[in-house]
Length: 440
Image 1: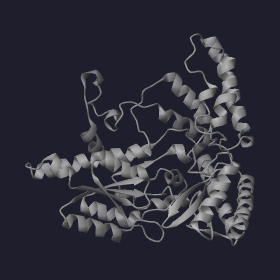
Image 2: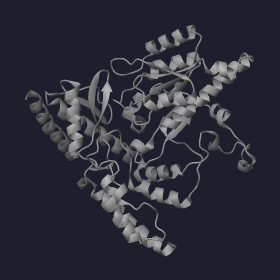
Image 3: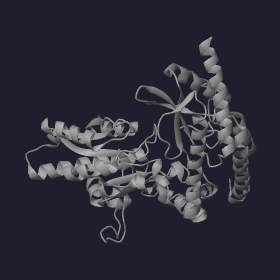
Image 4: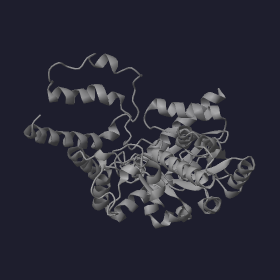
């Protein structure tokens, strides 16, 4: 493909993408295929000779699209938003053309791991400086990290990779980690000769969008000399709106903070941003200086060399996407987008509350509504199975204590009130069917 054909095909691809997004509402949100469907549709080997571009494009609809879950459909209410916008797509194209290997951040999961590893290195060096006879192995076996029982599973994975104990702190009635429960665990572990060194606070948990009490937990971490990391992967984008910044109160106590613009800030996946209070805590843990990566500015203090801030050496040029989106939407446009989603979630909450067969399970703060039929877990599992089997909308569940709960997350950039209302009518109809079947 030369530049002339690239110009022509590129314009065709833009048209295809625009047509896809404009017509996405008409596609089944969830694929009606079984695992392995693709195998008989494609050759067993790559072609020996080049194939026509037209044939490849035809096969997108024939082979690829039947297996796709359409995350940007206005009927996708599962997980959390996966952000998308035309400015970000344009920037993605330019990013691919430039091919710059940017030394910048990865995902929220990786941010937690990087923060844990940096905290582990920091406390190990401090203890060895005070007691040189201590070996790294002797310290490692006593290190303990803490997080809420509502935290994302990636925190547990960070503990496994980091080779340290991870203890979950019981959350309160609002699914929030509180100071008293954390302090109790810290005191018990110190009395047992263990070394608390790392705490993860979640602002906007995956299950129910609950918020750990940062104003309570933060001072304890600072007093105990424990690294405090904030995971605000979803909710962090909402802090662009002044009315939601109270949820960030206590951020001054944090040693590191992460959120994902690719979740709710109209920046295509992947794009995750991390802030750290003291950069030397990271560079001290990850700095490597082979001669082939040395450069004339590395000791000048004029630049920040992000290759020392992470696990992989290189990443894509993600900041370009943020630059495009921020400039083309402006702060007011981004705020309006967040507020629209929050308003739609409250609209769905209101519809649920009008039906006495259902209950709302947690406070609706941002764009997530946790709800269920009043009754057994089996009843709600059956309802969810009916919803996802019908493939008109897509939801995923969570467990809150001993309850099986349905999550309705406002996700798509194109979702409107009519989609929320149609989704609720669909849920109500299926609920009626499930309840009738139970009585029979």
